[in-house]
Amino acid sequence: MSTLRPALSSTLALLGSTTLLVSMTAQADALEQQRQDLQHFQVIAHRGASGYAPEHTWYAYDKALAMGADYLELDIHMSADGRLVAIHDTTLERTTDGQGLVKEHSLDELKALDAGSWFNAAHPEYADDAYAGAKLLTLDDVIDRYGQDVRYYIETKSPKDYPELQDALVSRLEAEGLVQSGSVVIQSFSQASLQEVHKLNPDIPLIQLLWYSPGEDGDTLEEWTGVTPSPANITDADFQAIADYADGVGPNYLYEGEPVIDARFIEQAHANDLLVHVYTINDKDRMRRLLDWGADGLFTNFPDRLKEVRAEAE
Ligand code: G3P
Ligand code: CA
Image (cartoon, rainbow, N blue to C red; front, side, top):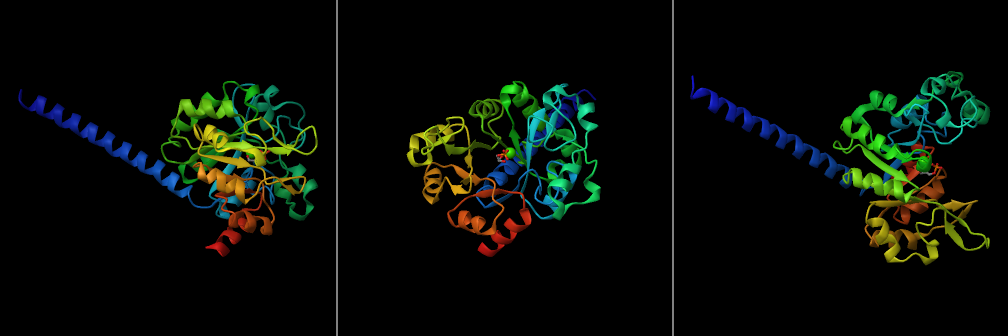
């Protein structure tokens, strides 16, 4: 009897550490697989298949997945009671029958809103009676439905309004095993938000969003938050500063129909080990051009169109 117990406990200890080792290896493999997949052109469903159904609803997400999107893009705000809610605007007027700031409404109040009827009015060509009464969704709702079978491309929206957003988001994703399973990318226009996420969990792939538009002189392009100078004046050092915390950049392609980036921008980003995911491209000719220029992925409201364009190029 006495000799058995030490033997048993060391066997159990060995078993325990082996199991841990196996799961850590599996996690490392999943993260590595995600990074390898990101080297291939990605179809990112912008707010879901938001060209065909009300953005950030089950209809838009289910359609995007049925169309074979690689990532579901989610914009995240926080409710007054601290829940992570998928909605683009800081206010409710455009995509619900509500009014005012998202952050001034409790989840119960947000859940009582109709987040679908507006779409039928705005897009009669894709209208569907089923959309009326569609609900706003929390990140938890989305994770409960799709789990680790789907990849999520999550934007921290207006982090200045939600100082606790980064911590709440990363803890939620870790708790659901979504970081370790290689199922999430986090994106933001806010450099500070991404740098905080990087500190919280350096395993999460990060994309620095960029918005280029004409500055006060009406000519020179400026980046909204000053992360970079104009595309024409970007240096390797500017890109390297982003590469310190992020895996890629997410620039707009057009400003009022005029291109603001070109093939040289993508080449230079690549030369500095940065992926380039361009937003928001719904036109097939533009999809083909950006694919030709070497973009690593595009945000689109029409994932089916982008899948077809990608298939043409394969
Ligand atoms: O997140 C990428 C792109 O969607 C950024 O613009 O305003 O659509 O969130 P926005
Ligand atoms: Ca977004």
